[in-house]
Image 1 (cartoon, rainbow, N blue to C red):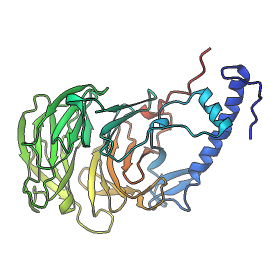
Image 2: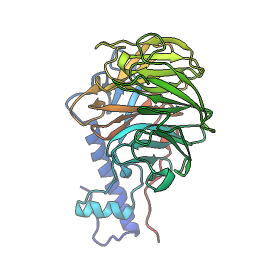
Image 3: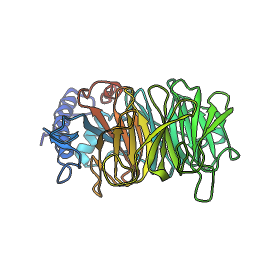
Image 4: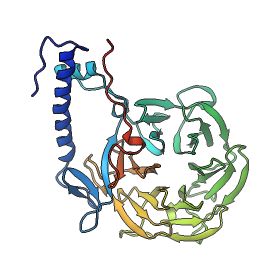
Length: 386
């Protein structure tokens, strides 16, 4: 192990040199620990050098596991003094973790995660090296049970609060803006999706066994005016049984996760039914417990499945492309016990939530370098003040 001269003091040149050597050693140890997790890769993955990539051979790899986010320490830069002290004393770094993460949204490297147990939206801003919480204030901006959420192109955050049965809107930094809907509008509020321009929001009323209100409610995002409803309870085309989430496609199509019917239904922007894909089963392309969905700039659709412990990627028309993840009891990349939320950012990175392991896994396209895109713009370590 690299030794540190006893004469070194925080902020001194010897200290900085020692820290540099120590950081290199620690980085090598941590990297080795990351690539040696578990006895074998998750199903649907393979090792390429020291990386976990998807899909397995003989197919060409498309995505690479990049990192996991579990708490504030994963985004806030460490200081030289703190790193040195922990190296000498064996202390662990303090972090504020996730209680019960559910859904997420990402905008320009800022990751918003709803935590239904701790009643906040937790924000991990990777480019700025910043962590903060939304909803921890009294009054109109207070959150009780934040579930689904989404963000528009300007960074405004829309939070579906299941207990208050309202959509609560904040600006990018968490300042309260307005509320939409209320108990008279929703039976069992589940998720909210906003179109990129911030004109319309699509809110899923999941209903329940004794309710007929299984629908998607459409509102004007600025005025809060209720515009129309999409769907009703049933199993036919355009009907829902326990809908879970909505994702907006590249051309404005709506992809509705119809959980109780084990399918995804496609509608146009005005709610006219187009087609559906998926069915109950155990094969690829089937669903067992679909929960949330996301889309990318190419129009591909990403659907999480809590029973399979993975997410599947489809074309805009519903043709299966690949899947990532596998159900497992080991807390390791690519293994999931209770996955829920998913998001795809502007650069094509995928963010995947597991409630059981309380973490967010990030995957990037193999053609992208780690330093590329918004998530690649990470601040360096804090240096000592002279």
